[in-house]
Image (tube, rainbow, N blue to C red; front, side, top):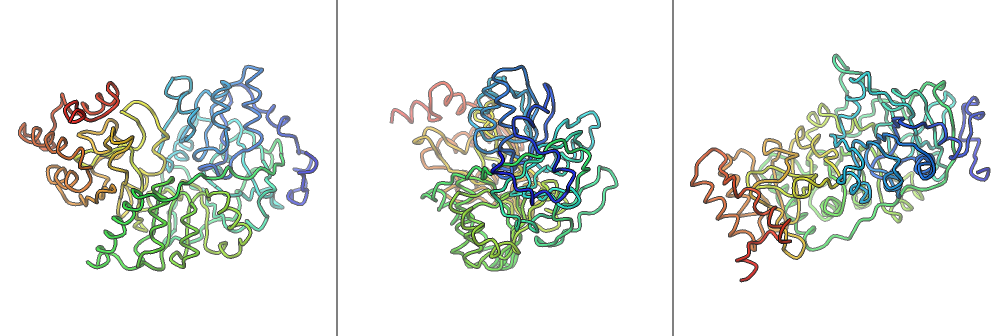
Length: 506
C-alpha cells in the first residue's frame, strides 16, 4: 500500500491520520449496514473497499444494502451477489451474476428512475445511509472531495451518511479538478430553482462539500475505471442511426429545429453509441449534450468538430478512449461538466432545455408502450436507468431497438408489451432498422398502423397486422384481443420462438 500513497493528494491535514488499507476500511462496515457508494455506469466507483466487503462475506456473516449512482465496474456487483454479501441493491445494475440473483430472489432489487433516488433519500427520514464510500482524485484544503469520472449520487450519500470512507485514486490526474459542478438540491418542497439555462451553465462547486468529522478512513488505490466494452456499429445500428438523422433533418427543414438541434441525451450501449456516432457524418453543427453518460461517441463528436459542449453525470469509455482523453485532457476539459444525477436527470432542467432523448428498448407494442427492463415481463435485465427522466420531460422522446433478434425467433415489436416502463403518453418516436414511426399527435389506432407499417420486420408484419385487425373488429379505443395479447411471449417461453407453428413450418 505504501507505494500508492501520495500525501500531496490529502490537502486537509486531519485526514492524514485516517489512512487505512482497504482491508482495514472494510472492517468499519457492519452487518446489515446500508452503503451509499460512488459510481455511475462503471465510472468513479469503489474499487478496493467494496470488493473487500464481498471478500469478507466468504468467511463471516455480513450482508449489506448497496445504493450507487448506477452500475458498478469490474466484478464488484457479481462478487457481492455470489458471496452472499448483498441483501438489497438499488437503483440500477448491469451485471449478469447479480441479475441472476435478483431473478432467483436471492437479492432484493429496487429499480428506480435515476433522477429520483436522491429525492427518496431526502424525503424518507428513516432511510439512513450508514457508510458512504466515495472515490476521489484528491481532497481539498477544506476536507472536501474532488471526484474522478462520475458524480452520481455521491453528494446525497455523503449528506445522509453517518460515516464516510474516501478512496483516493491516483490513476486520475489532479488536473481533473474543474470538470465537476456540484450543487446540493434541497429537500422537497419549496426547493430552489436549478438555474441551468444551457448545457454549459455552471451552478455549483468543483468539489463535494462534506463534514470532515464524518470521515473515518482514507484509502489509496490506483485501479482505473472498468473499461466500457462497445461493439462497432453494425448494419442494424447504422440503419437505426440513419433513420433518426433523416427524421431530425426533416424537423430542421420544416422549421421545428435549427441545425444545432437541441441538447442531446443518449442511453448507454451499442445502439446508443452507434446512433451518436452517426452525428459525425450529419449536416448538424454546434451540437450540445445534456445527458447522463458520456461514451466514446461523445469524444468522436468533439474530435469531429460537431459537438461544442457536453454535460452529464459520468464518463464511461473504452480503454483506448480513456487514454486519449487523459493524455490530452486540456483539449476536452473546458467542454465538459459532470453533475449530480438529480441535476443531470432533473425534470425541471430537461424540460427547460428541451432535451432530445434517445434511449433503447427491449420491446415496444403497436400502440407505442415501451418495455426497457424485463424479459418476457418477469426477468429483470438491467433497469430503467434515466430513460424515464428524459422520456417524460424532454422535447422529443425517441426509443430504438432492432426489429428482430435471435435469428428471427424474437420480434421486438409485439401486440402488447409484457412490462410497461414508458407508456404511449411519453413516447414520440419509435425506430428500428426497418424504419421510423412518428406517433406524435396520433390516436391509438393511427399509431398501430404507423408502427406496423414502418417498424416491424417483414417476417412478423403479417401476423401483427392480423392481430390488429382482429382486435379492431372487437372495438375499443385501444383495441386488444386479451386472450392473445401475450401469446407471442408465451410461445417464446414454451417453444423458443415468437413465430407461430404455421409460420415456422412454412
